[in-house]
Amino acid sequence: MGEPVTREGAAGSRARLVRGPGLLLVWLYGVMSVGAVSRSAYQIATEYDRAPLAYTLSAVAAVVYAFITYTLVRGGETARRAALVCCAAELVGVLVVGTWTVIEPSAFPDATVWSAFGRGYLFIPVLLPVTGIVWLRRSRRS
Amino acid sequence: MLDALTVTLSVAALALAAWCGYAAFRDQPTKDWHFIGMAVVSLLALAQVVVGVVRLAGGDKPDEGAVIFVSYLLGALAAVPAAGFLSLGERTRWGSVTVSAGAVVLAVLEVRLHDIWGG
Image (cartoon, rainbow over all chains, first blue to last red; front, side, top):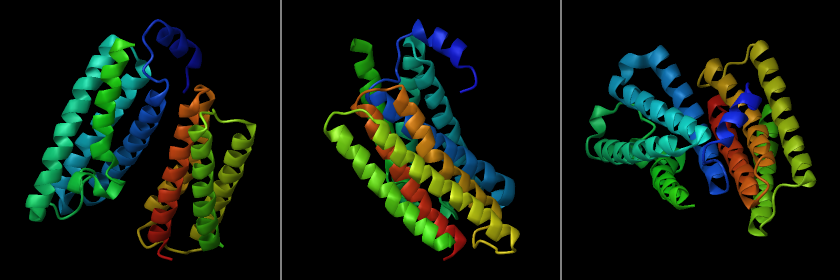
């Protein structure tokens, strides 16, 4: 939040995505970004060899969360479309990784952010992209 | 002292979540009283950071390591003020919902802090 003046000026000309329910969405994406980024950075830096696959997947999740947070804050039609694509990718990721961790737990000596559909995060990871897609689709009409 | 603060903060965070949730239910934005509530919770979180760092400096070792412990302390300190700041720009019920969600995040962080410290 370092450049409030320029950002507000720029966002004024774009369709705002952070309003109403969008605020809650950007808050949850922000929290998941901070959580996933710090978690994967710490695990990759300190114990990467223990569960390389799990930590790499957590890092991928972190990048997706950070990007969606950025597009939501930025606003506008291009960002809305980009966020929509990322939410869809995120949903696929959660479902694939979630199913993978359930079917073949031996591949994951340690949990990822998306293990068991995000059970470690109150299932927010599987609920968030669905809510995001609904919100982003509705934002186009209004 | 640290355990007492962790428990107090968990309860205070859940109370704040319920309070702001109620405001959202009544279709109200966050008001002055809510911000006072957020300030109280944030001061408790600040006290927790101070006590936690003092305990670390005194030679205590958290079960899951000092880096993770301090990260969670800082996350717990930032959660409610950040959500409160966002609610300033959203003068509808959704501002209240966001603060409520921020308080729930804080409560979850407190549970994790308890595990990390090994209490």
